[in-house]
Amino acid sequence: MYLIVGLGNPEPEYSQTRHNMGFDTINLLAEKHGIALDKKGFEGIYGSGTIEGEKVILLKPQTFMNESGRSIVQVRDFYKIDNKNIIVIYDDIDLDVGTVRLRKKGGPGTHNGMKSVISQLGTIEFPHIRIGTGQPEFKEILISYVICKVNEEEYKKLIPAIEKAALSAETIIKEGIDNAMNKMNS
Image (cartoon, rainbow, N blue to C red; front, top):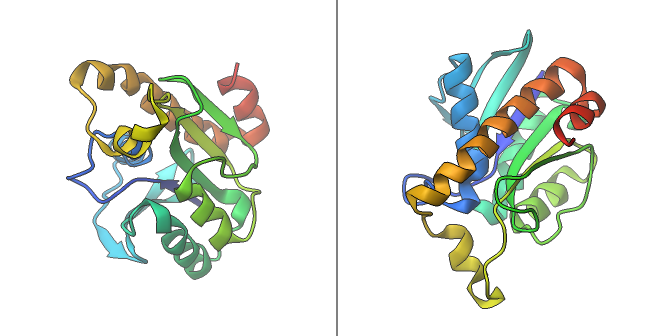
């Protein structure tokens, strides 16, 4: 069983923001695989189904970004999911807009949501899918940069990255993280 988590802030107020790239990817996976995100619990919204022949749970924590780990660890513990089968998808200001990068493990960088995830899970060893959103011109506006809605033109540039992030999650399930990294990071 896999747990695929998209990080974000509760919608609709934060929909179509840079910080909700994880949620957008979960929404795409749910649509693509006919998985209804209609359950509430574990401080999140989730649904279960099958991707690449494997049972999966798609999760959007509703704790706000900085407490995302609380929701994830509740689902992990309830369903007894191995940390290596938890795929976390999130925005990354340190990558250029539209870039997608997979990692087998790794620290949180500057991402507060990932700091919460790593703290709650007690490990850095789980697949990460990072969607590049670029950095603002001035560091002082970083918070507003990640939580403000992006205009239609910029969002169109992010859609291929959301699609690639969804494909990356599918590839991890089908072929394993190492093969997925070789394919998707090139």
